[in-house]
Length: 307
Ligand SMILES: C[S@@+](CC[C@H](N)C(=O)[O-])C[C@H]1O[C@@H](n2cnc3c(N)ncnc32)[C@H](O)[C@@H]1O
Image 1 (tube, rainbow, N blue to C red):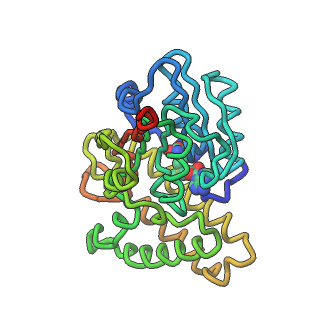
Image 2: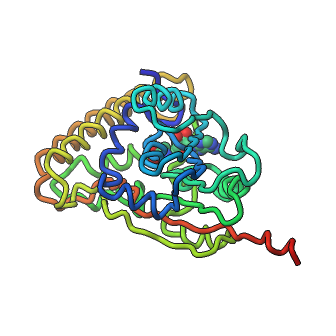
Image 3: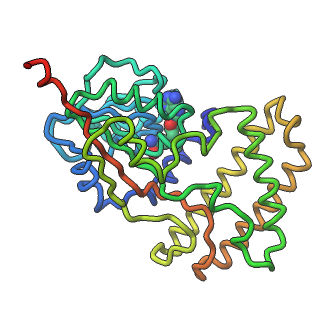
């Protein structure tokens, strides 16, 4: 499987989506995004199309376009749509220069995009440009974020691996960022500031809807199977990501092969510990629920022309 330069294998990205939006919430998400029969919808930073597909199910004659800069994600999304045959089209393009006419969509949405894109204000401006006056801008983002959840204090003293693992992890993130700017997890708009971010961009009726599923190993409502699956994806993804980056000639300038080996050993120790303790619901490990939908309406000032 080909890996995207944006840190994730398409297959892996899809698997991590299983805990994001509860299936029974999907109709509500579409309603809150303002989708109606015949809506023209754009999903920016669509990745493998998880949210694009969600937006396209439901109302008749909707047409959804997904845009992402990563060709491997777009290829995956298109292949997948050969089976599901939803009314979606995928376009490979930069969100900072969308290849669409002004005001050509009724709804412009994004899912875990505005928090990761390099220049969130510019991305939002582009999204608003292609949104028609009176249309809805919708953004789903996590309410909690990776670096906040990773600090070593979350583990008991007996976890002797925790401090060293956190230090190596920090170095690794910096190395990834040096080599590939798209790795900057916290580069985009801050999740908690999203309502303000949309309001400051001039949107009206800004509303926030909690989607309700917080993914955390300390979430007692998640089943053992869900948690075990998550640990498996996490471990595999970390290993694969490290492998991919260690093969790059510039990587040893930032992270040595010995450090990589140590990181993997500690990762295994950590995952072993998590598996052993996951029913205790006391560890706040990475929580990645995309659990806040924020929407706003683009002002319709066309009536001014009548004056
Ligand atoms: C965290 S992923 C989310 C993908 C998808 N929305 C989902 O939730 O499954 C963020 C996505 O934004 C895309 N992205 C980041 N910056 C972009 C840009 N400037 N133009 C287009 N896509 C971008 C990445 O390629 C990646 O697919």
